[in-house]
Length: 112
Image 1 (spheres, rainbow, N blue to C red):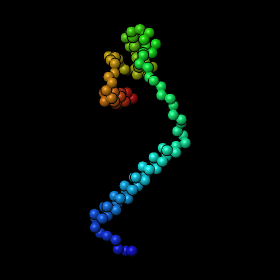
Image 2 (image 1 turned 30 degrees about the vertical axis):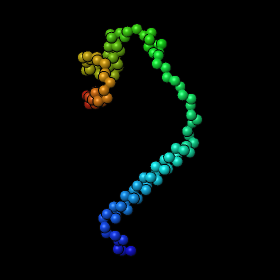
Image 3 (image 1 turned 90 degrees about the vertical axis):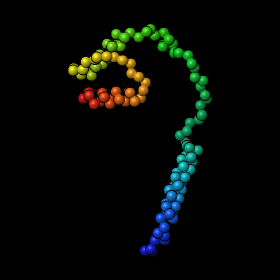
Image 4 (image 1 turned 180 degrees about the horizontal axis):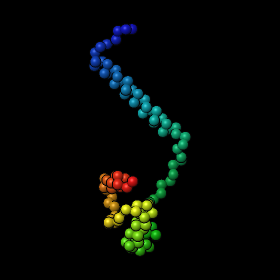
């Protein structure tokens, strides 16, 4: 028992890779079995057709008052307790994930 069965690195590699992939395939089969016998799965719901119409509240809303928006933002900054904060400009945030992440990082680093 003190001697290894083989010292060939390629045979050892093949044995190790076989064990790894056998375990991965076993885990995959277990996950599929859990999905089949899942007791928490609810009955399938009937498909609801989405409507393309605009909600009534949005359609009836008047054009937004920019002065009111600025006042609300100023009140939120004042309520936060930043006495040295000064609002320079109010712009709508873009939809870019990278831009929003950069803004949040900048806010976290400057407001303490």
